[in-house]
Length: 273
Image (cartoon, rainbow, N blue to C red; front, side, top):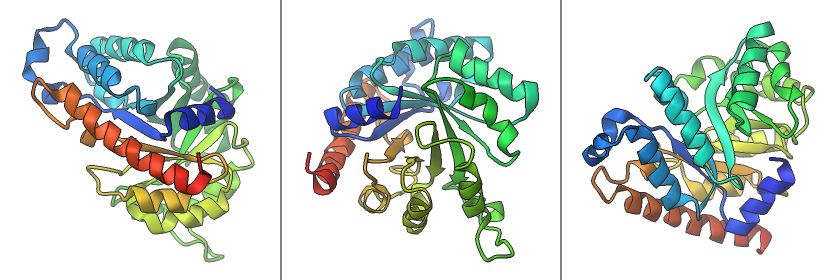
């Protein structure tokens, strides 16, 4: 999916919601355990319930890898079930060089056919380049994350007074255009989003931390919007685990709809559509 197609979906659905499919088999409603593939059944019902409001889906691969080959099967079926008009993100957080990086790229872009993958940029340009060789595929670099440990390295001060994450943004913009590269910017450090937007005015940001982690959608949006929205705001637990009973899909729909309605108001305020 290219940038224009993604923006068209945002305008059509009046939403920039990304639903994180962090599907933990130990947290599934008990009645689903009778299915041959309870993880896929859960995802299927979540997708059916939220596809009206979501422009993107982001399976975190760790929740599938932990189940071995059966988990990979669940992930593949989930990816194939997601509507084609939705943007798909492999939240795999890979980061390696050489043949290893090339194989990861082929895995997620050819074998699995995701639109995008999250990557750690700290091994430099040659760890990212193999992923940029695929048309209409995206890399999403971990730049300023929402966890407490982000302060350990991302905020290291360089000799010229800038932070390390700022140098990563500056350097990475030489590797690819905003048509191929996004940045992960955590919602829990909203004061940084405006600063990062000034450093990367045209890039899309994938923003985790809304919902269970306490991020403020209004503040994030007003700091992060650009000429084509420029945001994919992710919510995982607050949507998919809104209920652990038989009404889980209805509860998920309600949470997704609530976020979409807030996003619609913010988009109207910014773009008047």
